[in-house]
Length: 107
Length: 119
Image 1 (tube, rainbow over the protein chains, first blue to last red):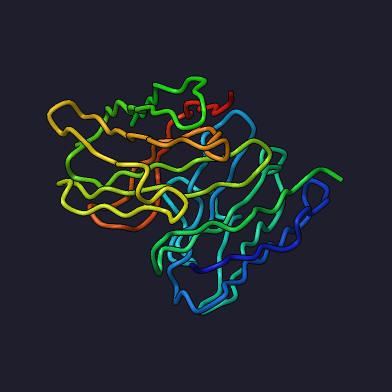
Image 2: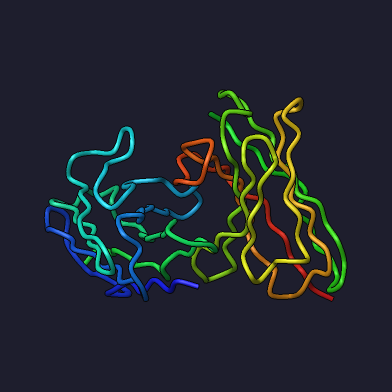
């Protein structure tokens, strides 16, 4: 199966700062990569699909880039509600896999 | 869109359980549906998918041969039959809607139902 490795494990930042999250795949997944946000007690939320497309209703401060094996989720200026755990997910091959997550916490 | 899971309980290792997911607010038989789980303190793990018509299914290696996904479009419901349960199956199980009739991404999720496998 395709292994997705996210880095860093934890990102400590202040509101207003830029967050850069990485997801690396063990083999090429083309552009078939998505990003999700997970907050405690809430259902996961789709942010980005096919590497760089924002899902419906997602603010423009969220952007995705990359292809092949290296992908990035960028939050241009952190809002208080953005502190959460973020997961990447590939749909290139079965079984679908998620990364282990990056926690964005308040510094 | 609303997805409401049910059926999570405490069950002994080796036991069986059936999870249900009641869907509303969208045309259920236009979309593929998935199950995803999250073990305590762990990340998300995709479990299974079923296409809109039920003709195709896929499973994670960790559950293949033990779990069966199914759907009843007349009842707008998704199911997960879980057999030969192991302690490592303990998790919050989410029902999730695909953004398509195929296999793309998960745009709506339920709140989850907790399955605990313990003696």
